[in-house]
Image: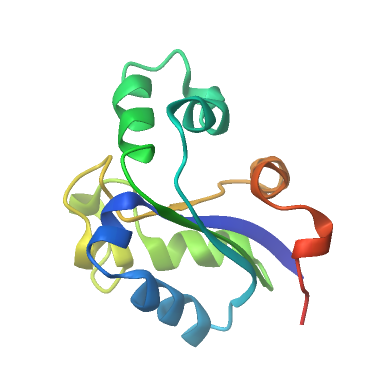
Length: 139
């Protein structure tokens, strides 16, 4: 079993898509093993996205991610990282496959409803950023 982190971003929370995102993961055999709603400060968003610090979009991304509440979750399943990324769709919703979360609901590259870890290393860091081991409940 593999674990990954996913976030329903402020645009997804604001559009009442939390349940829809969870449904899509669960109907594809991905289990939610930890979940919480938070409102990141700008500093917390900068810490989470530190790997993008030198990118031109860093400021707007961290402004957006600190603009409202998010739902952070740990997901678990066979090949969870690649499967969750497939369910989410391409970062750019215009390039996402039909039926993916981003194709169906996102308004742009930054406001694309969901985040998902892109590697086992990222998943380990990202899960640890939001959750301790006592908060994760494997099935």
